[in-house]
Image 1: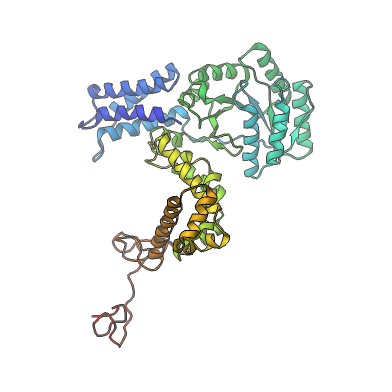
Image 2: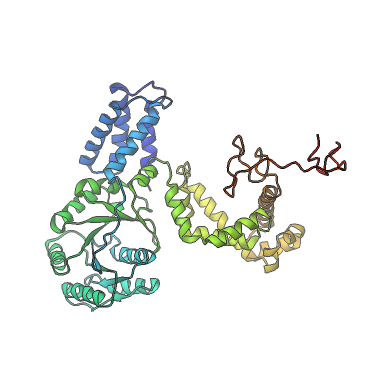
Length: 484
């Protein structure tokens, strides 16, 4: 996502490196690179023109900040303008004063609308809400069955009247939601391969009948610049209240994210970042701007982790690591946690500075995780619990290699890497700390600073011992503490 755009924008920063300040002359070349990058990313032409002018005015009008180079200052300006273009702040889903809140989903066929209905329903349930989905797409073959299958998968009910009048399906679905105490009702509607009058007229009748609180346009991010025209057409006829951008995890140029808000004036509320039903994230313009500029998105990474990690498990795991009791069962649990959070590539690209990892490197990482899991699965329960058994026995490692379809050297490498990691954790837990930190949990900051448990780390107390110890000085204990 946005990899190509990020690389091209970096050319713009290079144009300003080594300059003393931003001027009318030196900014022209940088702006030319930004314009080219946005157009290559399929951003709408009018949006590009307006964006470039806003950046130019902001850059020339900015004050010189001490210690900040012109290219860094220009990156900050572009970041701020990107945030403005995409809406400045996250806009949450509507909530009616009297439930249910009615959400009408619209979009072209193939945009992922039906799947997005299920993703949104699951998202709402995670927020403690009670959603009902309504199967209103009577034209696409198997659309109703698809929604019902997704509903069973996530255990959310689907209202279905078969292939009758879509307006009547919507009306009865909303009434059922009201009578049965649902908080939200999500109306799946028919899409077409292209916008037509019949499609719009039907959506207008559904809107007039159920009076939705939200009309969300589902847009395929891969259609690029056409997203602006699509958004404009739907907004003029229906008055959309927001958009959901799908397939942002694919090979997309990302221009749709920069065009929708400017064209319709309505916010992007969610983004689809994978095929799994859990792969729907709220849209934050500032976080997306950081991703576009290759700065990562650590807040989204933390939120993904919080959804999957149990605090009790995390504390237990930390204790195991610090006391060197971490075993292959724990290692396997951590790998499966990463899988639940999403693809390795998707997670790495949320980390600052990791956006430039090549697809080849990512694939190597994925392959290594798969190999490690296969080898661990071929170990006996006793070997997983006590990795030292493998370290001492070539025959055990050979059996694991044969069972997992890998080489003896692969198993030996896995075991030695695991032991090295555990030794590092042991040194931290036994008082060594990280190199240069002077003790377990000690901060490298002068005066101690907070340690890993959040307390201030004081210097080791001196404990007098009347007997000479191995420290070799009178008053020292066995480790030489307390000596003069």
